[in-house]
Length: 215
Image 1 (cartoon, rainbow, N blue to C red):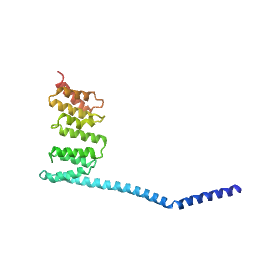
Image 2: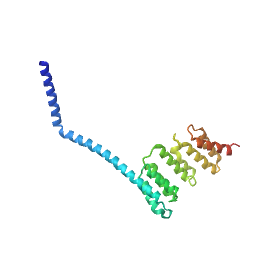
Image 3: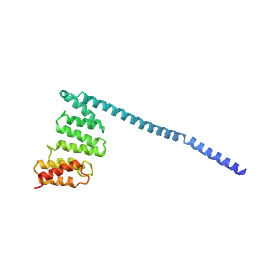
Image 4: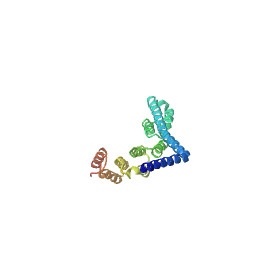
């Protein structure tokens, strides 16, 4: 009986302490709960806004390519650049490709600036970023000097990217067509010796070496 009384007193005391704690810290607890709720709702709200923005970009992009008219390049160019400036990992990239593939603008400086915006300011998966770096180098391969071209490709060449063999092959072809065969062979040999070379790129390299470097 005594033990039961002691237990009841202990329980009551504990409950009273908990009650007093909540009363004493009522404001802090309220603020904490409100803060947590704001964070949760903000997260889901932001996520919803992102989804709506992406859907809007998709609609804009699809409308542009469906209504593409080569006689209205300036308007098309402006709309595509707006999409690129949104820095979306999907539609900004597609807009840049569409701009280049359809020769909507031929200003290299402007296109390179747009490449840099995608590469440096857009949140991309690692290999998507490496692919875009490679495409920038490919775009400039007929006009840039070797130092600038290598500078563009260095992030890919100095990595274990799946696009590394593409980058090495591009440099090999660059020097081959400049008739600098020694430099070309150095890059072609790297493609052959690279453990994870793309099979098609490796085959092209082997054919190049056999046909032009076997003598």
